[in-house]
Image 1: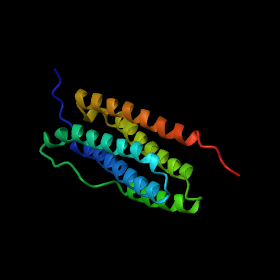
Image 2 (image 1 turned 90 degrees about the vertical axis):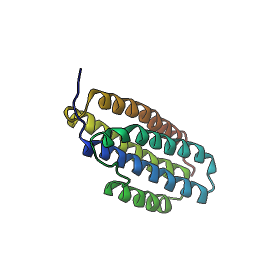
Image 3 (image 1 turned 30 degrees about the vertical axis):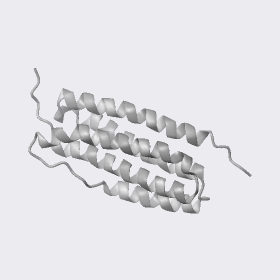
Image 4 (image 1 turned 30 degrees about the horizontal axis):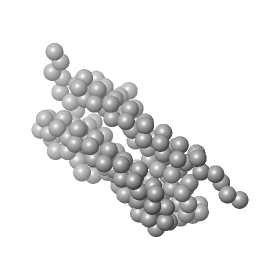
Amino acid sequence: MENRANDPAIINDLIKINNDRIAGYREALDLAHSMRIDDLGGIFAKYILQSEQFITELTPYVTLEGEQPTDSTMLSGKLFRLWMNIKVNISGNDRKSLLESCEKGEDAFKATYKKTLEEDREALSIHVVSLIENQLSKQLVAHDQIKLLRDTITDTI
């Protein structure tokens, strides 16, 4: 039976990317509302709840190591949200631009989780690795749904 301790800094990085995802989708909700494309609100809210659940699942593994779970975001996430707001406003303030920005956020999330699984697996218990893999598989479904929504938009001339 494995008793490997988990590196709380690694898990906190995953919490940070989830905090970024929550903040990004909150920004997307605001932008969608201001652009009067409120039909995207439900999906954005769904992925906010998903990341909140992911954080809830990760948090005990940080506290078990005597550390506090972070409530911060990654600097790259803050820059991404600023970029998303600028891009949507510059590139036409439209549904496609908003979904493209959301997909980029999902790409950043996916990259962080994959990097953790590739580079930090040895610093995590098998239970945490399994949890990360499970969360990543759920996020990939979210990514594909955002991409599908984006791809079904036809450009108007």
